[in-house]
Amino acid sequence: MTIGGYWIEAFRVLAANRARTILTALGLVIGVTAVIAIQVLGAGMSGAVNGILGGMSDRTFFVVANVRQADLTRAALRLSDLQRLQAAVPNVVDVLPLGGTRVRAQYGHLTPRLTLGPRADKRFATSTPVRYGRKIDADDVAQGRHVCVLSDAGYDKLGLSGDPTGTSIRVGEYRYTIVGVLGKSSAGVLPTITEYQVGIPYPVYNAEYVRGHAILAANVLLDDQRQIKPTETAVLAWLHAFKGERLRYQTFDRATFSAAVDGIFAGVTLVVALIGAVSLLVAGIGILNIMLVSVAERTREIGLRKAIGATRFQVMLQFFIEALALSGFGCLVGLVLGVAIGALVDDLAIVKLSGVVAPIPWLRSIAIATGFATVVTLAFGTYPAWRAATLDPIEALRYE
Amino acid sequence: MNDAAVIDVREVTKVYQLGAVRVDALRGVSFKIARGEYVAIMGPSGSGKSTLMNLLGCLDRPTSGRYLLDGVDVSALGDDALANIRLRKLGFVFQGFNLLARTSALRNVGLPLFYAGLGARERDARAAAQLAAVGLADRADHKPSELSGGQQQRVAIARALVNDPAVLLADEPTGNLDSQTSEELMALFGELHAAGRTIIMVTHDEEVARHAKRIVRLRDGRIVSDEPTGPK
Image (cartoon, rainbow over the protein chains, first blue to last red):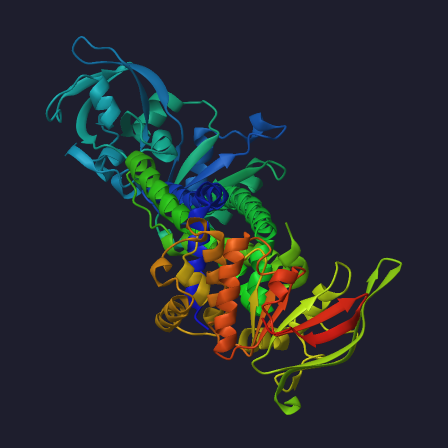
């Protein structure tokens, strides 16, 4: 028995009913496209956010007073708390308050409002590249120098051009000497929190801006990055002991962020993939429907085939392969579209915005979509084929 | 002669149960047809001739009795075994031609060979030879819609013969044809008979039946006469 003959016959029938074939396959095209594109985009976005977090130093973590608690005022930290914490918990090099201040800066005739915030020395900085000069170093911190590092946006807002290192600018009530300008950071959530337009050594910031203000979040700097988890536990324990047992604090490090982001994207991807799976199911019902119509239309043909000696298996095979060819066609178009759309959006939107090229699980996405489409076809293509195979040849030949 | 019987029907009955109604389509029919015979089965509607044709064509099984086709008792075979018998031993010609639309004459004729498992090359070669034998060598690539009724029926006959069956079964083969074309078709049947084919033809048309060498007449599920046609 030549299987090829069944395929040729199937393609002839599908080609003869072109409009019907395309419309039926369309459901599968959409389903497969959606499932692949969604997985690619999910992986791309999750990879992008993780890539941005990858810029976060492994030697720092955040400690945050949980804002949803009754006694937030008591939970809020003071500068003196941070100093005690640094002294009390081993492995903590320093603790700097998180969060900047909007201040008016002045350079030449421009007076833009900029975000100004504390910076630790470069061991604890993100991996944002330096465009001019250098980052804040340990000496700047130790000696409380009035120096600053501008972000890319800060540099633009001040209307600077060329290498500005050595230039003195007025920010708020003080003057700072520019020692460096950072390059374009990879966009995302984290740099906008931690990479201020004007970054100054944190002791200077503490003295001039924090003073006695309440601090809700702080950045803990570590000596030994391998001790990050025990140190987080120790910091929380110290805060509970010192500030109050019932107050609530949380810590976040790069791994925590990554896990959270991965969790969110995995959840979103799963939900949307499930919707895609439902659309594949609907497409499968479309195939079932059109195959039943096909069997009904060709009842006489089936009767004839049986009369001249086709066995039930041969008739079943013919219609089954026809369903397979139909869904194979839709699946193939869906694969091409899904990969194309996924690649295009990943390239034009995600990579361009985040600057991170994340590995995309192409094979896995394609395998999942194809696998599901196959299961759907097997499930819904069998029944019409069985119906055709079990027709009574006498009845079928008499069918008008 | 009896030993050479290609069809041997013994006390065959067929009962249909249509809801609460019991229909005795055949009430005990026995006859033999020898290899090379040309037989017409006649009878008014309701006489059981269609039922008999379905049984002879292995499309159905008798309620009781035995049916030996080419020496094989087919009265109790399963569906797939019957399909195989139809494929190897029988060729069908229908009133409505039953050709596959949008399919060339050549491929229509080759269809039984496809189910027999032959490759495309051999199918086409044998189908082309069979088309030539019915005088349609130049119509091989035509689709049924491009052929006249008589030509379509010739294609159907070529399809019926392509597997070299033991028996050619024709069910009202001229029913959809005008008298001129019917005559031409009967001439073709005559040639096939002369060439040694066993032909069984169901018809209600006396004109057509007279071309056969023997007429079996049915009425109410029984054979009422079985005699050779007079010399023409």
